[in-house]
Image 1 (cartoon, helix red, strand yellow):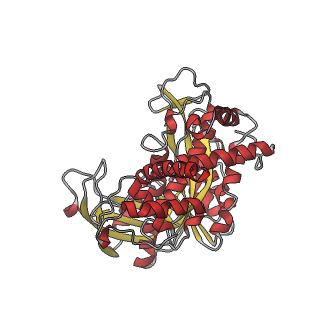
Image 2 (image 1 turned 90 degrees about the vertical axis):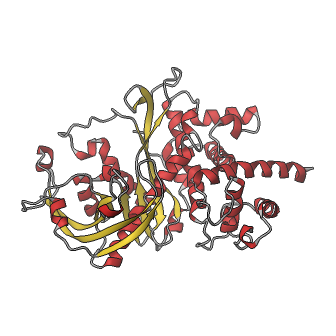
Image 3 (image 1 turned 90 degrees about the horizontal axis):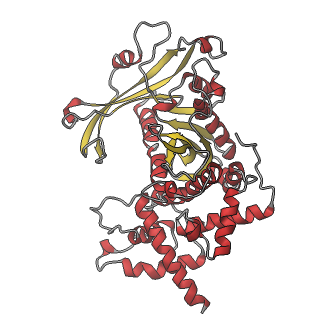
Length: 452
């Protein structure tokens, strides 16, 4: 683990970081030759990432300085997940760990996004942990704090410090975070949580298990949802049943837990969403979520709010997609060692956050001025490009106010290949990424003419 240092020890490091972050946010590439305007800058950027005195904690602290103000007074969802980055079999890249089936080399990245629970706007990146498989043994006899799974608690505790002014914090995570010690830790840390259950757990002082108990509860609500096509599921309208209640799960019967201070049971609320068999397509698996939560679920509206928050976990999947093979292509980077690659990966996360923010405001539901992301010159360029992308009918024109982020998002999405038709699927992060890259070409051309 690296020594925690929150400020750059050298002012020159801060200058280089701000410059390279600006270039990545403009050009959406992690290739040093593309980021640098000359060979001198390329060497400067490369030295920055190789420098062992430059820490990820310093980069994160600088990037997240405005996050606390953005989150003040809001209900913030701390959405976390892990993803592997594989760099293949390159012999010149050193100090990487096994990924995938163990033959390829790379490392894992575990970010925490801060998302407004009411508007679902991504406020920023709260924390990130980098780890390699085999850094810590995963023996059941080791304390939770010494396992790699401890990241599911530690990451959100650290992220909360970056948005301490929020009125409420709620952790969102998928089944990998269904860990007794982690759930206990959320309660001790006074962190709200919505965690998808992974196993059919034993209940405290009851013979029946979790799923049998939930099945005995009455259905509170039935509703229809249009599901898009995925790799595992056909596009169809699913009819879902909603159940909710309170349970007490028993502490697992592991020696290390019996010796710990974790209580013999944990009590919290549960929401189940289950697709009726009548709407399941062929032999596909029905939608079935069991969500552990600290939030209230007494009414249908409260239970549906929990489901809505959990669905937005998809934001972090979009983040990974943006920074990997179809987006910034971080795994194609040719840096030579783990320390350089890990810092470049974090820089990629920071750039991907900007794309995710653009996706969130594409519908014009949020009143945000374009100068939050674009300079005055870039806004002028957007206004010049816009008429060339509009059609003859009202439906083919940009419907959003000038100088708004939604107006800018419409232009960037059109540049990325989106046709603007109401019948077309809404633009996603890859469309916006391509649009940003094309927009940067316009900006560079405009700067040449303005300088002349």
